[in-house]
Length: 142
Image (cartoon, rainbow, N blue to C red; front, side, top):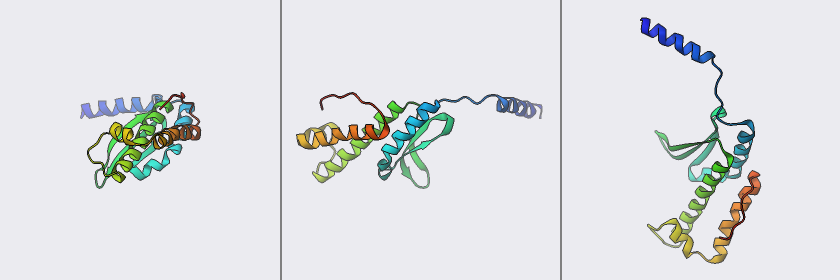
């Protein structure tokens, strides 16, 4: 019983301590814009949620009744942007691979099989998402 009282006392003391924040208000706003820019990924079972002071959490691969299989926490908008960009690009490549009848092939192999026009179109979407999210990205060739 004394042990339980000690645990309760420590818990009460911890509860009165200042809560640590892991994301700044500025980064929270930037992450919110990034999440909104990539909202279409929800169709691919990827959801980004605001976890308050903890940042933003990417939930991935929903299966009932267990829920999401993967979760990743972000407190940096650029890291969130790059991660969601990769997810978006990979979903596009998976779709294109299916349309071309390609199975068991890597993302790089699918990308190499595309026309230059299609490659440019896909890569060009990164700037589109960056504009929507208010993120500046480096310009580079393919």
